Amino acid sequence: MTGNAKRNGIIVFIIILIIAVGVSVFAPLNARRHASSNSFLSVFGKEYIAALYIEGEIRSEGKTYNQQWLLDTISALGEDSKNKAIILFIDSPGGGVYEADEAYLALREYTEKTSRPVYAYMGPLAASGGYYIACAAKKIYANRNTLTGSIGVIAGQSVDATGLFEKLGIKAETFTSGKNKNMLSYDNPLTPEQRAIMQSIADDAYDQFTGVVAEGRGMSINKVRELADGRLYTAQQAQKNGLIDEIGSWEKAVNALEEALDNFDYELVTYRYKGSSGILDLLSGSAKVKRADEILFAVRDYLLLDVQYPAYLYIKN
Image 1 (tube, helix red, strand yellow):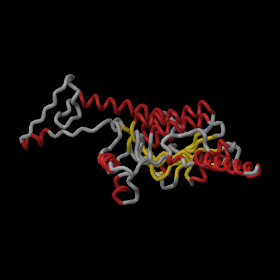
Image 2: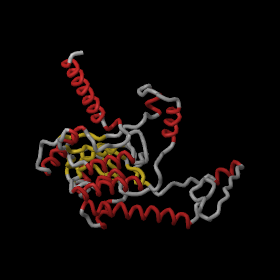
Image 3: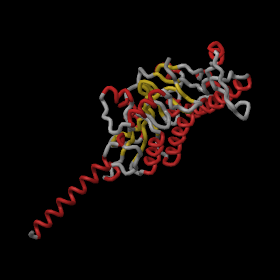
Image 4: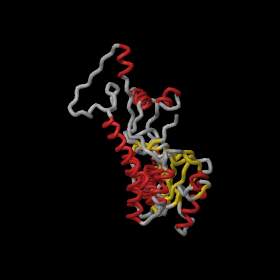
């Protein structure tokens, strides 16, 4: 092999290597389970705005939402000097108190450490915990058909089946230590003390929620509590009551953020989680099964509401 041939071979190898690295870095983040600060735009020195999607129930992990992925993404964006802002796209009925507050605090920390703004845009539904997270934003935009609000708390649920059991001649007994250890169980009627315990949990979480809204929206706590009766608001009603800033398109919200940054040349990079396929996808054939146990896990997730109580969750009847 001549020297030129060797040199050309090395050049081709280097080009292939660069392409391979570029493809791995530029792989869509919705296919990743964890975020990375080494985005394609950062590698090539381009400054950008992160479009961060929050979709589905806010819980540990679901088809469209993953708590650890979200926290890792926010943290990585904060460490990336090429990132200049975050704009949230929220389409969520809410979820766990713990997860919603954790995401809210992560966004607040992002702003406090970097002095970069967070804007929020609401899709079809940004209720309860979804609205809670939006309160971390400097500005909140909504589509004119958005439903939002549902500022309230579900502390838990109790089903008392003792009357039915008695009629059927069934006796159930749970052995515990601690008089309130078995509360909320189907075989144990709630006592007045246990009702008070559960209500205190709901009240504490409600105080936290209304406090977050009051701080984020610059409203008095009394005004927030007048609005926070658990109801949904249309975009027009939410704007009238000060729960959002503007009604318009996603493009309007992005343009407003770019204008606030005095730069219209930033790239918009999408960060969107996509988890494993659900049971309906598997049964319909729209998703391929790689392992047999995927069906079992999908059935489990479909049958069980994987949200830890208490919850900032809007439940559709």
